[in-house]
Length: 440
Picture 1 (cartoon, one colour):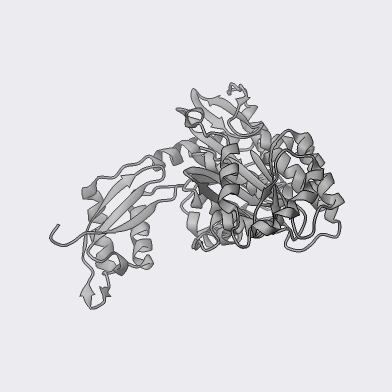
Picture 2: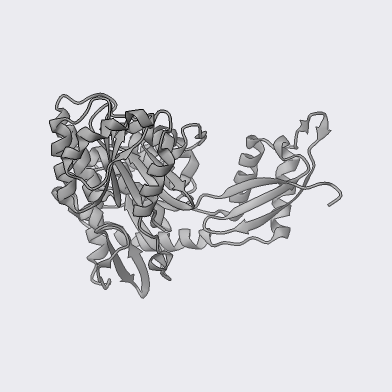
């Protein structure tokens, strides 16, 4: 299910990041072992009065002020207009209205999108007269707020919540796998998608998707149906008035959120780079299945040597996903593209796999015989049993007398033991610890 997207725009130094931190909970700890996740502070999930949404701080995409501030602002506005369900135009109550604000506001009003105009740095009733200057924008409603102190923040969030569209889960339901094609810009995603959809054996019928202007493309391969999600987001890149490079992770995450399996596309000519790790880390964070595709393989000059080198690099850099299938392909000349579908089937099957409690405990006993539980505060940690509690991704709970005594190293070893015995190829698995008294 895709959550509504709220985008904060405005001039530099109006307080976009401060408002973003307050909306997502600035004191919220972000502890992730996956690459790149902790750095993506400009894109986070939030909730207000039981309504969940995703909020984006466009200022977070610009670590240093651009030389052309107006161009930067236009890029933010273009992105917000293209992607957002609701746009927050944040204005500076201290500085007052500027020509820049007026131009920005015109762009947003012309878009027809839902826009919330908020005047920041209004931190007391006596300062609400700072709003008067901004009525020249000709908007129906101006909301005072202080992102720094929280003044009028609840009223601001209630108004935002009222503008959020209802999320309809039924639109997302389908009996066949949802597949996202993701990767950094210029790795050949568009060509690969067109090749996947253009096979003679496939029946293609584009239908409207559930996200803004997205196209979900059902296709059939040897009688099996698949849904390539949000393919319009890939095809339309030439028409978008903002930097694809800068905002590409947002597009990727929107597709990853909705998929069952992500096809993570890598560039065979450039090898593995940091942004590839961030994309894969996001797939793992959302618990989705993965198939890695080294695209443009037809252009590689020494295939055998390059393959050996990339496999070694893949095992080292994608340690958190080195159980996933990897395939060398060419979207341009269709090399090995048909082998993608059996790999998707394999990963889907692994994600749905259920293991009996008896089998799990055989693996658990073996694992703990190699790495015995530690002593916690002078008392032995006793492990009772493990059972599976979920699928897609597979989830397991280990019951112990002292949950805090079973460390991450033990959980990683248990996960490794589960993979050695049951594979779970291409899918993350989750292992949790719960307390249980010895008398229970």
